[in-house]
Each structure stands twice: as structure tokens, then as C-alpha cells.
Length: 431
Image (cartoon, rainbow, N blue to C red; front, side, top):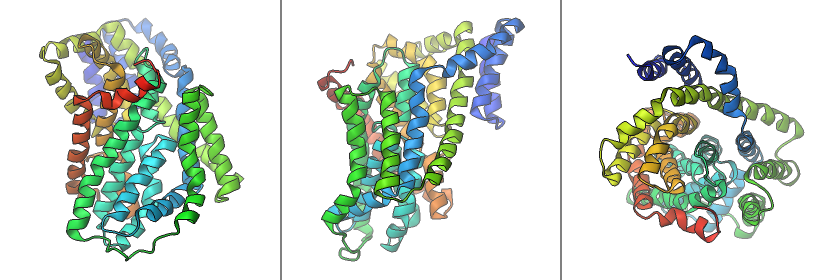
């Protein structure tokens, strides 16, 4: 049996047996080194582990994770909900619209779907349940809407994609993700509104409408966060990594001085929580360095890419097959793992068919977003069902409906690349 096959079988076997992804990647790479290279080459494990995380842009990941935690603790979600309710008003589907809008705005602060899902679910679920929405529907809608955080800048997944794929401008990726993210949110609103009106959830006039002026004043600090981050990037005032530092500082000032819902002790606790979450993410990235080095040295990724290209000469058909494969992976793995495992294989395929790397990155992100609320794993859905105190199985029907809606948005971006590429082109970024 070839060393390539030994490495892939070891990795797959470890995953199936329940070994965490990080260790499955590291041990799979070690098996590949032993089978195809030399036991003496195991001395490179430490170097490759270090090289996996010794990248300056990766600093942004823990900082944006911390940003999301700070804004969640600062009471930002509740203020955004009140402002959105004041804008939309009580009507059939009004709270559904509010949930989607707030998830998208929160995504512009943290770049993390699970964090947004938790923050919005805790605020929105009681109101939606009281208004007559079934808990499984509400939990699924919030989980699906929170998945847009992977597209709307700043996105942790897009940061990693810019590192894995050489020569891709992160600012261009951030700009390219904005309209597809808005399109995905709009696609989710269509079935949500139709169902709300059909089942007459949330009777008009049944919920008191907050005062628009006061709710806007309270939400203003939260609304400024995406403006500061994206405005600073566009103006060249700071780099994407420096933007993460600015976001943390701004979030801390909002929580400590403006909303006053966060204390210095809370900030210390959040630093610890962000360190734990970031440690898990960076451990995956570090041990994936072993897998990536072994796969490159053995030619595993090249062989797989050649096999994929040999399946068909039709680039469109192959793109559809890749999207289906990524969707299946998204149902089982997190975005970080998918990028680290699949991109070394897909980069040669992308180059062979001359696909735009920015556009292709957005398609992958949209696909992974769908996986975040598609069972059996569905990390966002796990968060919202836990908050709602319901079983994951109760949401399957609703989840499939929203999968179809977001898949339609994905198809539009695939058919019309300008949806993703127009904005970065206008802003003068390299696409």
C-alpha cells in the first residue's frame, strides 16, 4: 500500500474512531512520514508544528474571538434587538426579520457563527416563543442567520483562507464577502416571512414597539463597530490584524464605559475564555502543519488534485461536485478543519480551471456556512437548541428548508461572480 494511502487511511480512521481533528491531522501526518519518508524525518514534527502557527495574520483570530465575547457580554445584542424591533415594528414575521438582521450585524463584529448564535438566541428566543413562533423554527432560523458571520467581514474563516491560499488579499476577501453575506440573509428571510404569514405567527400589534429614537441611541455604539473596522481597513488606517486590536479595544470601551454591563473582572474572565477557544483553533492549525508537510513531501495532495481534475473536463460540473463535497464536510467538521484539509488539494484544481481565488473562497465559505446549521453536527444549531432546551432532531425539517434557501443564494454567486467581485474591484483591491 502506498504511503499516500497509509496517511489518508490513518487520518480517516482516527477521525471515525472519535479522535479530535487536531490530533488526527498530526498523527496522520506522522504515519505518512513513517510510511513514505524515514523515521529520522520525525525530527521535523516540532518545526512543522511551529511553522503552522508562526504566521502574523493568525494573530487576528484570537482577537476577533475575544471581540465577539466582549460584545456579547456588553449587552450589545439586546440593544440591537430593540433597535431592529423599533425599525420593523410588530407584524407577521417581524421578529424573524429582527433575528436575521441582528445576526448579520453581530457577524460584522465577531466573525464567529457560534458566538453570534448564542448571543442572539438568548435575547430573541423568549420573545419569539411568546409571540407564537415554535421553538424549533426560531432556533433553526437564528442558527442559519448566525452562519452569515463566516461571510460578513471580519470573518475568522476568511482570515484563514487568505493564509492558506498564497497571494490572496484579505481586504479583497472581506469586501467580497459582504454582498454574498447580505444575499444569504435575504434568502433566509423569504421562507421565514412566508411561514410566519401562513401560520400567522406574531399577531400585528401584539408586541409593544420600542421608541425609535431611544433604541437607536442605545444601539449606536454597536452599529459603529463594523463601520470602524471596515472603514479603517478601507482607508488604510490599519491592517486586518491591527483591525482586530482596534475591535477588542472598542468593544472593551463600549462594555466598560458606555453600556456599563461589563466589569474589569468580566474582562479578565473573557480573556481566559477567548484563550481556551483560540487554543483549540490554533492547535488544529499547528498540527495541520505536520499533515500539510507530509502530504506535500509525499505528493499526496498533487495526486488527489490530478485525480479530481481527471474526473471531468467540464469545470462547471467539477465545481458542483466540489461544492457538494464541501457541504458534506461542513456537516461534519468546522470551517478551520475544512480549509486546512481540503485547500492543499483544491488549490491545484482551482489553478487548473483558472477560477478566481477570491470568488472561489467566498463559494467555499457560503458552503461551510450551510454546514454550520445542517445536522448531524451543525455547530450553530447545537448552540441554539441548547439555549431553547429542545432536541436537535426537532429542527431537521426547518433546517432543510433554510439549506435550500441559502443554497439558492450560493447558486446565484456561483452563476454571477460579480456579486462577490464587484465591491473589491470598485475599492481597488487585487482580485
